[in-house]
Length: 341
Image (cartoon, rainbow, N blue to C red; front, side, top):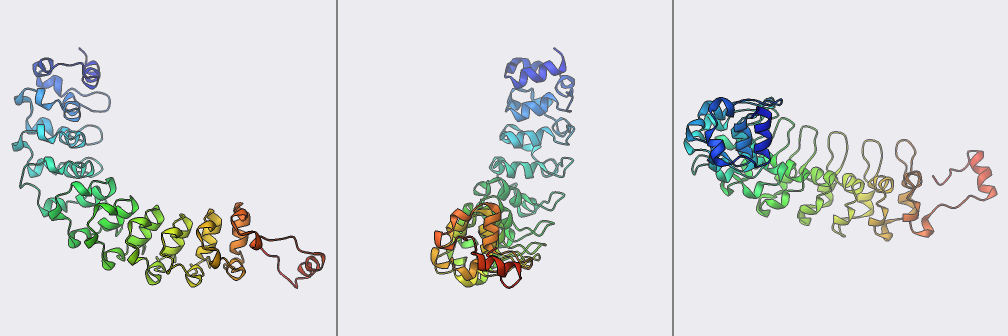
């Protein structure tokens, strides 16, 4: 049987254990067009136990495909590290890197399979192993929603505060991916939630930008925290308004003063909500003509932003613009009055 036919047969689960055990090492390590060997596929699909023990050598398990992934990477992806002889799950083998810098451990963390490692092997040094972008195992788990499968002893405030090369802590990554809820509430402290990336975004910014502000305890959604600015002048409340999360702000904190906060372009959260179609999330008592008439530094009002985006119908009828009468039209032409938007 040709190499590609063997690969296809293994993928389709048409090779018996006897047939796999009978294959010599050179057949197991023959590559298909993407550089995958039969050993890669056996690791991915949980068939390592069907191979002759002699074929599971360190050299064979570290053969790389075209992306630099080894059979150990594939076993970590598929959740089959338990089929690898424990002696071969050594630190050097687990630190084998793909061409993009991902170790076997990073892949295992991303897929929630760290628990398959031999007892006592995983330590802090291994947990803090970085990819080429500076992400450690906790970053990978935070991105992929597997923090709840990381041994609890590694979920500490100190380790969660370690940043990648972009300045993102584990909490930033968890917030961006909606996974803050996998962490104990005791770890969601003001210091942790207000830590800033290289761009000045806090964890609260990340949660608001990604639509997961509801994962943050409401006790932290205070005026001072909501007006925190990134280096570009973008506040948490602007992000919440843009992504339709003003309804996550405690009623006592959502005030006219907060809605009038300006970013570096002079836009208020009301501008952002109006342009994105989220005006209905603002209590009617806060939708005043004065707020709707606030102009950004380009002269655009929230009313104009809503009109341009086609969301005027979200405003209460008494606040929607009306056609100016003849006198006002004349005054506008003479520059003695401004149009409503």
